[in-house]
Image 1 (tube, chains in turn red, purple):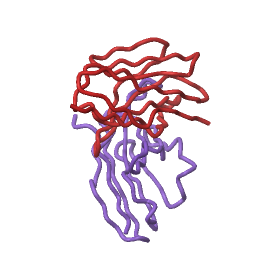
Image 2: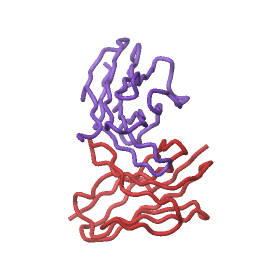
Image 3: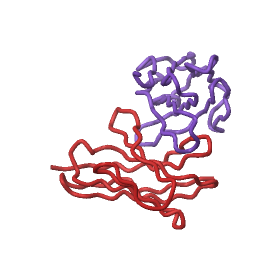
Length: 109
Length: 115
């Protein structure tokens, strides 16, 4: 089986830094993906960690610790447009993603 | 490349009717996935195709649901005898066959409302 835990909601102000944590339990772990979904929009790929450590892509970074079954998404210099839902999702060997309920991020002025 | 295209964008149907949705993936993508999403939940996996072969189906997918990808390009998802519980956003995604590290590209979905 598989389980994912993320906070359901996070609130932060513009310009701040926010960290969205993800703990997982899965058989056959290959890595951890992060997706962003705006209200009414399609999920879009943000990052993928296959190995332990930090991956940086502009204002977004993602971290993975395989030994702790833990990862996080770090968003810096928050902007209003970052208000969205964020999902961590470990892919299977076929690339299939199983999503949890995700974290709703609200950025306030 | 215009991304993953889904049609129709919206579908309203009466309970008991059959509906069919279409997904056109990114042209060179040989993997195709269908998901369903309800309000406040993450996308729920339904089924997966590698080219024209349907390789995986969720146990949640009842026998009223069927999907095809006849030539390994576009795919259709049919729901027979729709029920109100089928009301959801149906998302299609495609990706290249590059193992696990192959991002899924999602379409904008078909929103189904069963009255």
